[in-house]
Image: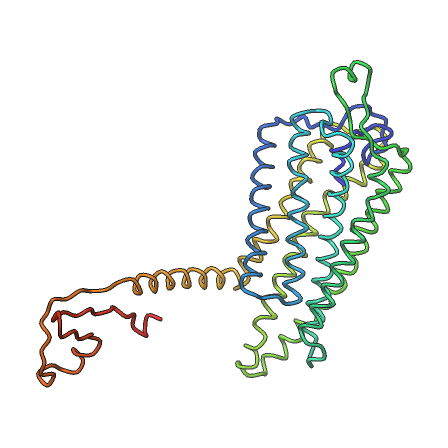
Length: 378
């Protein structure tokens, strides 16, 4: 949960401190807005491109379904960036009670979907590379993955409901009530918020991280043993596993990025939860840095996919060639040459190659020769 969106008093945010000031950064706002704006645009654009390239290439496999789901969760999570950016400029909550509840709910939903999708990727890769016989076809696997995705979204939507239902817009003073200055706060006590943050840490980070690390370690161990054995196999046999190797490399890099970029945020949130002195300037700066790491994860995931897979390059190459080819065919179909060369009746004087394709017209002594595209161009 983005604690910067909540007031950090006794009843607000993830902190248990007694400070009555909102968690507003002391950093200059312009650099923050520029950084957040670049991340927002790049994250939405790259994730949309990765989804389009998968769907356009019709590469609907179990792993690609999970990649699409991860891209959707990254897009949803990036929707909280504009809200956070506005909160940097305006040190109070301008979006009302519904906006307060939606902002926190979207933040938690996207986080849960993202982390459990990464967990599913680690399990899928391990099961795929270990599979020696085709016990289940891709349609059955895809159906199982789709079922998992549906259940995951339902769980992610239900998880933040208790927290979001406790949120309200709090006016800090009577003068603030007149000026419209307000905060997004929770009715829960500091102890209740602390327990919720710990529950969220266990369900949305610790548990999926343990599963992910377990299967990733087993995957790496299996690949190491397989690599040692594959040296004794023929080159043609090893080439059959190129796709699996690329997909496995992609998933392992996504997992490493997740731990590197998300761990600082959770460490800071746990510290803020048990910190009774309230937020300091250093904590505020670290809060912004950790949030930038998390938001950057949303643009690095699709960037890895576009770099390490062939789907995007094949999709662009296919569409460029198809577009050029259709344009050439359209031009050729609409191009005619009108000739006024007299028709020679004695065809024996003309090579067969020259007479072919000429439409004879004895009345006008003219011919239309259509410029048909050659078979090589097609």
